[in-house]
Length: 381
Image (cartoon, rainbow, N blue to C red; front, top):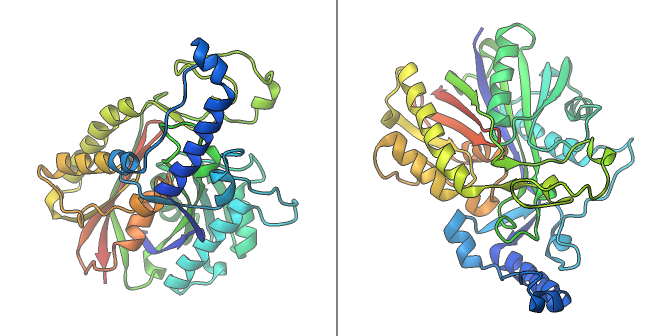
């Protein structure tokens, strides 16, 4: 039995931080740090920190602002990190709460009730706990049936989750599956790192997949999909449950020259990522177009992962062999920044209403792992 996409959902935090606000906070931190370390800087033992710049951020990444769950602490030079209060175990966790918010919108769009759903997959980059699974909590909050589980393939979690949901439906395990992507990316971002402090934002998305015979007449047929992974240390986050077993400062120093807690947050070798991921993704898309009998130029739209505007432009150009109109590869990172696995789903959610029966498009993710996922869809009805 075919599995199709019936609806999507999007939850967005109420607060947003512009590049100008972010830079003002960061530069205040720079002034404070340089002042406190003036003697060592003068002696040559430490390098002075340099200012960030809003115009440079936009030029380098395409990002103009980002939505966040915890705004004021991020901008406070004394904190420079989100502060999200811990909740009692009997209260909904923050990750489950925002996932359920996005899921409810998808269910409403499809005209479904929670009890119609047989499985929930929470697919995201950073889970707030090991167990019980966030997905099982979402199942409880929504009142869905069946089963639920978590999965993590970093920025490709949504496309991998969609393909996992398709397999569950085609294998007879479920008629209807919710794939939810709650991404609180600011919690793993080092806001004191000039090279990365602007990259991420917070959001949650949802995709409802159903067996074709129970789906709405107007839906998205999945006409092909391909998932790939290739190990790389160029995007990494070393935080995990074993951290508390090691001394607080074990003196270990990785190839990035960073110690202590720094590598427990997001770190990347941006130039290597750009150089290696762009051809990997372009090749994946091109080969899968051929495998599915598609001309890349027949794709009405490519909803690409939202990490870097220059990266997306180059991937689209390599695939189509020409400069690409922004309508063919729409951008949401200017408003949302990088939201990891949710990025391509936000683009799909916001820029797909003009598709008519038979129009085809591509949902594509890529990120840490390396990982990449390509989901080719065709509008039906």
